[in-house]
Image (tube, rainbow, N blue to C red; front, side):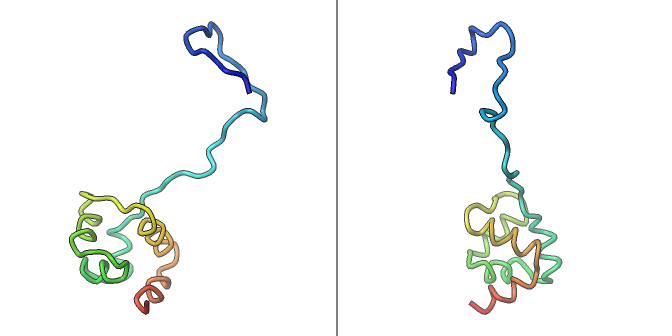
Length: 91
């Protein structure tokens, strides 16, 4: 792969198709309020399902905090398939 000096470029540099980068996926933010409504739970129950503190779950709902890591992935899974929440409750 060739190095490109940004300041030395007079014309756009064209790369071969094999050198181009691509976006494999977009990072999406789960819709916590909708998940909470679909599951018909309050913030404390939501916190219990995902194994986090009630203040953290409230922060997700109020958009003052954002879910990261495994919690974000679990929320995205539950958003796609709400029945997963029942499995999480059983753990």
